[in-house]
Image (cartoon, rainbow, N blue to C red):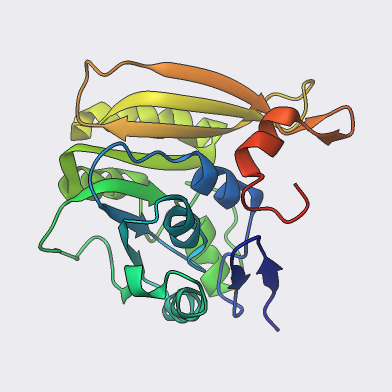
Amino acid sequence: MGKRFQFKQFVVDDFSCGMPVSTDGVMLGAWAGNKKGQNILDIGCGTGLLSLMMAQRFPSHRLTAVDIEPQAVKAASENAVNSPWAERITILHQDIREWEPAERFDCIVCNPPYFNSGETSANDRRAKARHSHNLPHNELLERVSALLSEHGEAHFILPAAEAETFVDSAPSYGLFTSRKLLVKATVQKPVSRWLFTLDKHPDSSYSEHTMVIHDQGKYSEEFIALTRNFYLKM
């Protein structure tokens, strides 16, 4: 049985694909920017959560979502069709490493496979969604550099250790960090996630902030402000 998650303006049904709705995905979809252009690419779209969030936030933009896992493509397609923005979202069954679209994208969003080492899930779909064996981070950076327009931005979320390695590797692919949000579960805990933006300009202005999700047993004001347009009870 799959799981359904009701947001304020749309529903996500995971149809038993590898990656259900997560706080990480919601944070990225609410945080990712889009300064210029009209086309957005969602790499490794899973259920289509990020595409739906970006469609809600940017009502005049076209979205293309790709995934290598057939069940994820089915889930994302169904969720897009059942959303208010079906005519603006295209879901493709593609291996990003081999895909050569005719256009370059002004905004890329990606909640990548996280883990470079450690035990993989016995569930093949879950393993593809969580582990970078099928999409190593160096190959992802190479493809993002090729698919991003000259003045575009790419937005990611990763666990802190993996994010640091990813960001340190990015300049080798002509990508540079312009924005970063460091996320802590509580004030006392260390940073667990990085949300970060890469672009093609090493002289870009740089901003960095820290956000705590839970403050004194409830959601922090910052987290509520970030996600209130999506979560039902915010």
